[in-house]
Image (cartoon, rainbow, N blue to C red; front, side, top):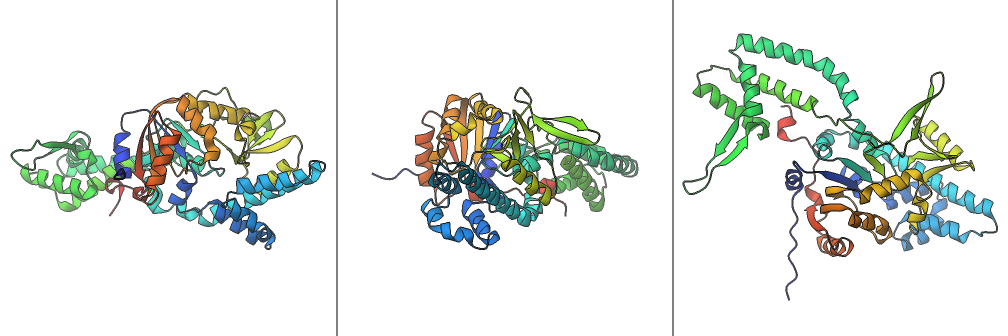
Length: 427
């Protein structure tokens, strides 16, 4: 019997299918690697070993046996510590957690240039498709990336740039027979009909979808056919201005992590998570380094410097009334989730979803069975899941086992690109 042929869609095809439908995003650790930052457990363990003069090298056998799953590692260390010595058990657990968080943060810091590299500028093309955002990662990458496209931040740039665009429009229209207005209208409303032969139906494509070079070529032909006498230089200048304006409009109107700002003293504020906030659409399913419990309240660390972050984490871990909200253990994750109102809200939100979901960089590990259960309870009809060409057979089997009643579509992780499309690029 022949093995089933597994076809992987390309990333660009997935983006096309997401148009005009309700969709949600779920990210695993592979998403970070796609941005050029390796926060795999193996990489983190190696950094922990470097930072602590090789102390963790003595535990390498345990980590390797756990397939570099540091959640298993932390659990085994605390389990091996006697319950009769609660101080040592807590100290060991907190020490490993702090070293883990420091190592992860240092990796992020050293490779942050990759996250904001030009080749990742087009990540907006992915983000703009979703209603809700979920991540299984502990770091705050997703939060920081989404804030880059938040409306209030972009408005600062828009105010500075729009007057010059309006000046160009008025100036070019007066000097060149409405060149700006006509090209802008063509970009917004024009269509291109393509016919490959007498026996085939024509394909209609809006000019707004064309890459920059193709769009300029069509405008040149339009100018020639209609005796506009527009120069190539002026056409290129106007097109650049219009595409720059489109780029400015790449904004996410609603990014809400569920926190509210509260004033403490003059010039001092803190952010507290509100589990009743209905506008929240960003969820850290297993917690994150910047989320902590202070008594009965769950708050967000907002310090910007490395030293402040480390000081706050250490202070939180060593305070009986405080704790960083991160589900480090590999087993019984749901027990930890139930201890946090923030995590419970995120967990329950999964089961309330409709439409479809895109999953990037998640290995579908067995220790995430609680996540599978919530997705299966939801009204999500289609799951788009990334995988490598090498792993597509294994992933296909996992997908069938984990989501037996959902329509699933696999797409090629190697085809994912966060570069701006040609229509957004400048020469």
